[in-house]
Image (cartoon, rainbow, N blue to C red):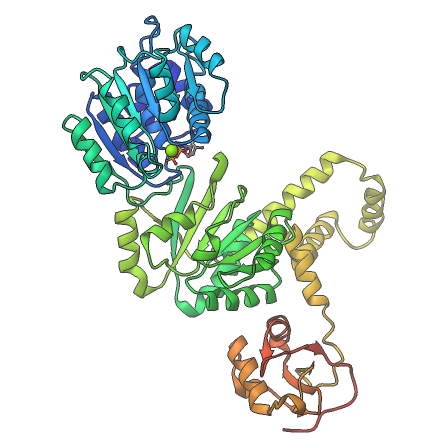
Length: 540
Ligand code: ADP
Ligand code: MG
């Protein structure tokens, strides 16, 4: 699959290796892969990577490995800007030290009673994590001695400088012996940090990760070759085949997300869209539905997806190839979170191939080619899922009354096998398992039976009319434009003062209904409903 660097490549101690495993890290993040070996080799390192890329463990792991537990003195000092960070870093260190109880860590920050810190310092801690101000306090009181420090880390260096800690930092660094390793971690590297590096680091090695997000290890990535106009069909088949709990489908524009959302809903899936122009309250409603499971497909744009924090997404589909490699990494990062497995499928149309090559090159991934799922693939998985359910039902028991019915029935001209096969067939025709078929059934249940339309057509009521300055061409334009059905296919239109009627071919009725429900005609909500029977409209 991939030949990425593994934690086992670092020759870590058993204890640290075990702790990393306990923490659920499967492989080093890119900044860890770059920084850890250099720090292990004793180099001074300046590392730049965005927030959330695992910088703490990037220095934490090699720092811990260099502590000598038998020497009871401060051997490593981590400076960071705030109390919160201090506690977070201390916690990550404690986790990494889970199997090395003899190595002790002390967070030292303002606001905490200094006496407690004094006591702890006195008993001999190995690693001190502190804010520059409080560290200065202890240095002034001579309660913290830095004479044995061999590693010093400036974490979030840019933020520390912004907060005016430059003088403190310089004073602290001057108190630490020259034969030390100086490590600098930061999300950005403005000139003042380069200056600090020049003054206090010894032949530093610069490492930088541009495409920040942790590349998620467990996730399977593939692509399907598909022409633009076949994407919708392939999408639906893929969803039926994969049967995801929660899926996110990415489109490149808000317009495409909206369009796709309507079409996917029209096919009976419980989908909703999320895009950048939505009000917070709308977003909250959609995300609420997604979390609760009343929506299982989210159709989103890159911007809109930025704030999504849901752990159970098991399928990401790139309906459009993302414009930017960074987007790709962000998108697929929506799945496979919290140690769960996930899959990302990218739709690639013939003109997208150069972009896919770029993505593979810069994101350092290999996408496997996946064949277009066929109708029979889908049927097969559905049958298999159904038979699993049958097996469960047999196991659960309580079938006596049903057994009697089948016994009675099979005394006639039907064999048990025939009955079972027919039951399976009927069940398959009803739709697959889970919530989606309820929805699909519901769709079939929408009563277009008697709307007073011509044969093969369905007549809809629209809450727009002459008073809204609506003309036939507005109705044809809106329906054809929004749903993609040809204008020619649209039938009789009758416009009255405050409402209208329109006929559309039966096979498009569901689609028209579900899409137009959320659209406007001449800036009026359509208020579309299947028309009541009788009351035949005139020709247009
Ligand atoms: P940064 O300091 O770069 O903002 P952190 O060190 O706070 O990032 O890490 C962000 C989160 O990622 C933390 O919850 C951390 O435990 C987790 N993490 C770090 N390294 C890995 C890894 N290799 N695999 C999975 N999760 C990791
Ligand atoms: Mg950090």
